[in-house]
Length: 112
Length: 110
Image (cartoon, rainbow over all chains, first blue to last red; front, side, top):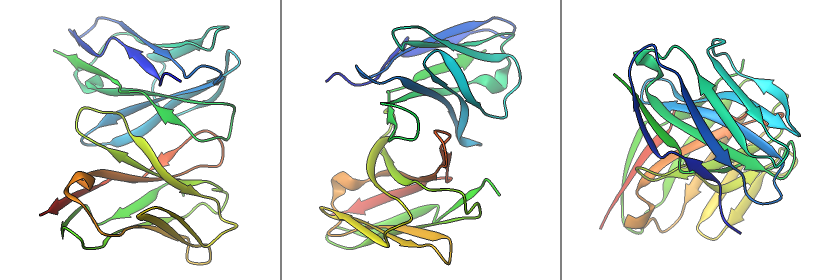
């Protein structure tokens, strides 16, 4: 089976812009979670979707949002980008809630 | 109460030696404890995981030891190899929300 794929792999934006990141889970997986990884804060949970519904949300501002489509693919959106949003954004999928999560390679976002 | 504390921050081991990384948690509701390995430029890859109903789980050279009463768990890498050089993260969860430790950078020298 193909692993979790994320697009784009690299992205450069300027402050104030918005960005959309995409994640395709492993075939058959219905749960998708998003994490932010930075050198200072480490790996932090953003949100989790299952069957197109957000089930869990981390402690991030409302500028961070996401959605899941009927084919389980997911997108996350960050509006009004700030310099501190520069990070590796990781998507993870699992067959259903409470199962092992498999991570994609991430999208490296740089905000200038 | 949601934190997972991981130590050491970095670890240098000679080839063939044992690498030991420790984690501690507070929230007794956690019921799933995975370890992930991450190489530069890659996403974390699941190494091994344990649930609190067992005290030890071994897969190849990797062993998790779990102490429920102390709320601690550790990763042991036996016969460490240069290819094991990576950053290792412990994590804990109740639902699909993984709470990660701060990571341990392991360097294995020949």
